[in-house]
Image 1: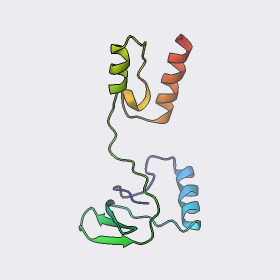
Image 2: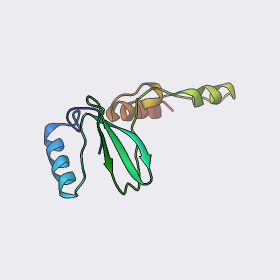
Image 3: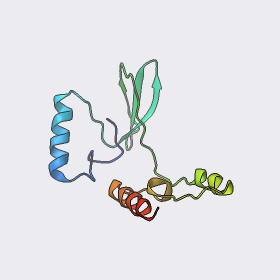
Length: 113
């Protein structure tokens, strides 16, 4: 796991963060704080430290899940509206926030339908 932040899962409540970090360690998951994925090369992940630019190679990577910068993207809604489809934009398509916001918006829109 690679994070640009000093502490992984910094926005997760402390009780959940502790159990998650404990479980990840038990599973042998390596954590690299203050870093970012630079590239994947010949099955290895090359991780670059944010401050020193030092690279670390992690061999045998089989998958990468990228959670990048969060920006709203409602372009599909614009296309649907142009076709006359009634459209409600919620969640991260409206504005990236927490899951509870998207759930509440979905409930609110669903209740009105």
